[in-house]
Image (tube, rainbow, N blue to C red):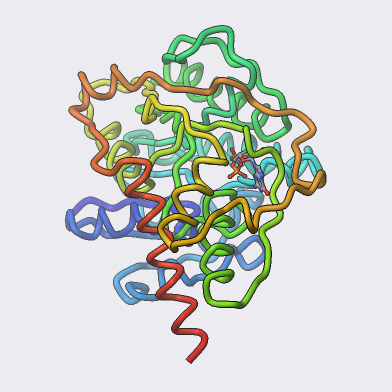
Length: 322
Ligand code: GDP
């Protein structure tokens, strides 16, 4: 039986990945942090099938204890400080968790469990304002916020140590991916959730920042499949995982409100406080390599995904209202 250790198991990606690996008969061990936990709502419905271990990416001893205890076949490092505006509040904490957290895992794997394969969650935010669009695995990083800097350093650490330490360590460069489990502070979920609240008479308006901002958005359950495929590959190498399409915040509003028979222009208001200090631009990924070498392909379109999120928020909020 294969064993997977997932950091960030209570998050959007960690919870979908855990479900995928359980279907594949893995023993799934998850890191839960008392200090940095985002809540267990994403794993509550299958918690009894998981092994949860208390620890933190900031605490090397806790990671060492867990990795020595299970010598996992695979480690998926998905935990981190993930919200870009929050990374400006504390660049040092961002780097401590997102960059040094990974280096702690790498050192432990090198010293105590060198056959463990390691997956690192790299973000498209490493490209910031990219030289080339769409980006490929060889596009140079050029981050524009502390989050992007922390992810760039971790990304580059993976490729340097895999040669020097002879480890099977890979980075998945994942573009924005959303779902019913996306945190409420991220724009897609903020829009679907507030649109549903407006429909139900619980809110009157939706305050947003830059409506023209664009992203390459995919569906998280499609993206966690790519993580697993990368560790089943015969060689350790990095992949871009993206939809290859750009959509704007305005389009998310249009799809969500129209699905609820509302006109977004009647409810959306602009608030300067939601504008970014710096904004990544033309971040579109070319997933050709993953499609060709891993046979990966996304199942859900952008529009289908937004509608699924609206439907789920309707279910949740109607339930709360009873
Ligand atoms: P990110 O790409 O990881 O930072 O994901 P977000 O979902 O937080 O932001 C996606 C895009 O939406 C960014 O380009 C933001 O500038 C833009 N955006 C516009 N209005 C808002 C808002 O009210 N909240 C958030 N989170 N993003 C917004």
